[in-house]
Length: 308
Length: 108
Image 1 (cartoon, chains in turn brown, blue):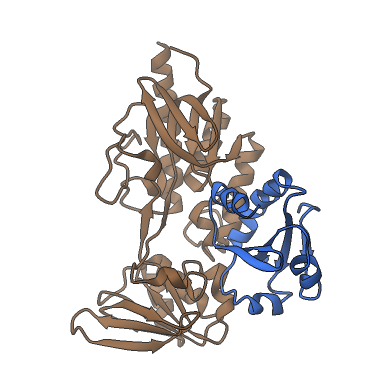
Image 2: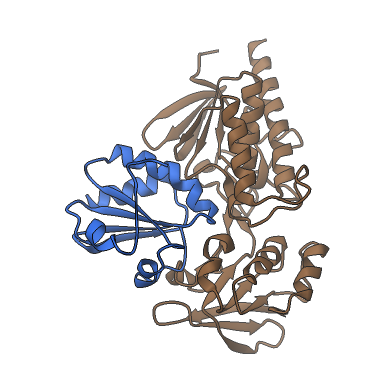
């Protein structure tokens, strides 16, 4: 087959992308990793990680991300800060288009992750003015204030507990009658005096002159709406995949997550997906890194078969 | 840390930013903010590309409470672009390098 610039292009620099890079670098593949903003991924906004083995006392998300990055760099992984705009498939050759150049490759691992979902109730005008998706970044700005947090999963509960280091009071708004977060986090939330959970409710709006002053909370069962005087609104209602650059070249589910099989193969031979970007039943660091190792193995097999 | 990105404080903000002849990109950050630390190398790389055209400075919001409060900053990283002492653009949160380049090109 025709020569390509790379054997493997990895898209995304979170735990999945960096792990793919670690495996590919050790396999001496001709590889590059493109990350659009900063390596680390969603993990770097997490205050504390307790479910990634090897750190008996837990580890801060930033530190874990940094360790993964350093491990990849120590193995010689080539990481470039570049935004992938699209991928073209021409049989066995894939062209990855970046803002200012294009590269060709035999295989691609898409590990572009996901971003926090928005409420879409007009909160965008309050971004950075009370509305936040990052407790570790913005929590200290809400010292002794009242805030609202939205969600009921691990992230929502973990980060709400973290916020109580700073805030006077936190209302956790959850659309259902019980939390989805893992039990140990639920126990901590229930024990925390500063957290009050408002069940069966959603945030229906917010207002304020320059920044958030008031959050509207609506009970989904009764339809009753009430105002909470709060200066902050933290949103953790799930994630949406970063797959805009994929276009329609791969099979994806309705939410834009990429379908793969157990070998991380997508609907296009030679393109693999790993981590939160794919249709995985569990979106955790520990599953993302496992996906990535399998994806690199599959990419190696794919290349070997090309050369046969 | 790049020596070309000066760390300024509440006292030097006026002379370094508001009275600067060049446009200024102010990076509001804190040591406890993971994304702020993660984007630092990207900002340093941009500083090298745009040296002489735009001045890059950093403000540690922990040590300098007055300036962030004056600009009502409630989230970091926040990047504010100043031109002739006025805010020309503002970006909150971690964004793609391409977005930052676009913003810089927009104010030059």
